[in-house]
Image (tube, rainbow, N blue to C red; front, side, top):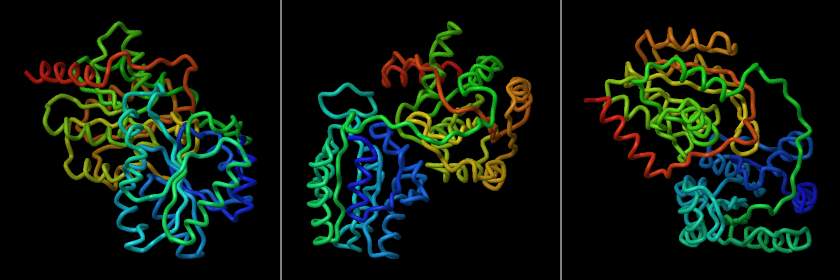
Length: 376
């Protein structure tokens, strides 16, 4: 089924308000929503899934209509609180239609961080007492199942979930084009940063392609992959780094992304409050969720420098020129942190980008052994 067919059915049912966090399982639908936003539908890009569920709840309160919340199943875990304490029939009884991408579906090959959530997605929905079904792969069945879902939602004033498997939707190419605000890639930026380190630093990289590029940079330099690669827990790399920096004297370097940072923006306030002087936060800003298909973030409307300063970072700088990056890295490490270095990079990654060859458990052990040696 292609996104146009899907939209025609949703439109026929009067469903035109969408909000959520992108998922690669149905990235073609995300691109379609972005293209159509403000024309025939409204699509609100949320910082995280809890916020999305609250936005859809507000939409219902204002219009008496049912909003649609989209997310990866990892985000379902995040929404347990607002589902049970806001939308639940025993609280405010908010009607919602949830579209949940099924990463880690049992029996299907997927990344380690998706396996547990993939296995417990349906049991979790059952525990939350949310009626659910598998999203159909053809228009005829979708129209039938959507009618059933909306009847249930109307009768119960309760959430209903569609679980979307991989390859359910056909590809869709976005009609939008954006001029990149930088002349170099995130991978080139990572390589430039690594080349300026002395070798005694501790590095934590955010989930997705950033960690994959850091791992491959280490391999290409014939260095041990001794960094902490955050393969899941989107947005948590900066907080992991804070916990390390407060308990280590070594320079702690965080390689972060705009989408991940926005998802857990509250961490900036905590970092600024505790002011670890050995904390160096590199934020790669390309204005997209690169790892899920290039859907836009809202970073282009955030004054990132002022945000970090307001949260208490000791210094903040923005770089959009590759030639200045290496020189700037040297200077930044001469000053005490917490420091934020906002690096404007262009969207995208190599088509042949690999993945870490170590398991998360192996990575953790290598990293802890390395940190122990550094702190002796």
